[in-house]
Image 1 (cartoon, rainbow, N blue to C red):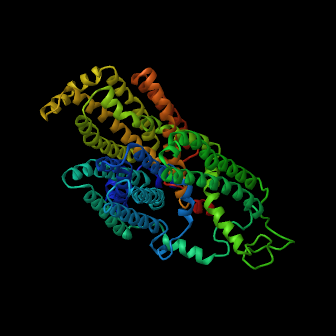
Image 2 (image 1 turned 180 degrees about the vertical axis):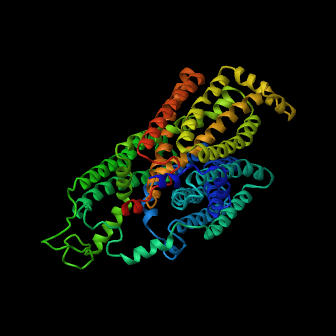
Image 3 (image 1 turned 90 degrees about the horizontal axis):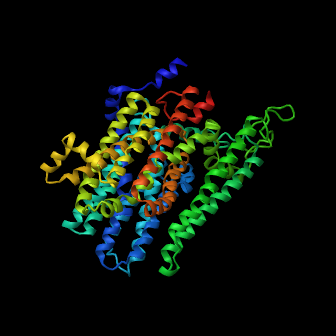
Length: 592
């Protein structure tokens, strides 16, 4: 036990410095940039191009926001990314084959967009290409998250990789946002998207040399045990009949969710404006049902499977008629052998859909309730508030667009990257759970900076004056009001950066290698969906009570996340889990 703890001790500054020189860390930065660039271009900057065209109305632009559903529901196709290989590309690696393909598709879609002028005649093909880029981008996100978990080791730890990933992502947001607008002002939009598409293609080519996790070992194992590659037909495993029932139930639920989202997208992109479904109503009504159908009920089924297997019920026995069975296909000694193509297909589907859930539930037990509650609440404050930032700055506080651009886009992004760097250092020096808890506290308490702005900002301005920040901003051409806004944004963004680094590292640490694509996609999608669902209620509260009371509420919600962090910290300590333990490996656990 002591040896295990030694292997997972906090790495310290020298290990951090060594990790920054590793190829894995460099590619993580590159992949983070590749993940953030298409998101900024497709769900943000593209609207500026449509506005400049002068032919696309606001209602049609609103339909483009539905492309963002690909990110919210990306977990629906994550099982395929865990198990399906692209013909001819498997030798690249389990994850790299999808990462490189997605990046090339994104680059090709962006380049293709550069040759199309948006108009009422071309909006169909334009939206199709934008949707393709968004789908490939969401797919890339799933696989990059899984790659990060799979390649993490004692030097390039999951904490460091998570921090570097977010740094790349935030830099890409600046490139795809502010820099793209700057380029468009001096050239034109086709040049912007042609350049960005070329960057994605270069990244895709560079990704060919990225390291991957034990590709050769995986291939060898599959070749040696083609009859039962997942170990589902050996003694102690659930009998095929019960597994078939569980797979059928979960398959129907996930199939319904995929069809529901697909039909909604088709109707939204092809119908007349009067016949288009309401996207807000769809997310608020169908969103929770989709979560229940794809997460809650499958998790309950997985919990039942874990319980009956541990209790020795509905499992394959050790002997039949006094003889030890074999699971090899075509052998008659075991009635549970995979003797047909249908049996093997069922095993593959069960491995893709059910085993990621049984692994998560089996490892965490009742603690999964704590984990899910933490996932749902940790980022809810900034996820909900983000939609109302610009109305608050421009409408309530009456800052100009230039002032908001300087404070939020340029200075704010710099503060966020600083927060990520500080968070990454804290993860390595003081540990994951303490950083997670402090990040939650700081992210919550900095909402009070905006509460002060809502009632005049006297306290924030006084602090800015005291530390000399107001004088610095004035020397650069700003005024007292701009310094106050920049100080508030800096405080929040540094806190969000620390919290973001800790949260991604925490999520990456609780998913298992081998199941990382499905498990991480499920958990991260829950965070995004809850923020979306809460915006309607928050908007109503702003209308009725004003911004000050909203910021007090978001602070209190954030404190609830702090309490959950402490509870999870205690749970991990009692279970003997080391502070900076790497992601679990189900194969290693099984071997022990």
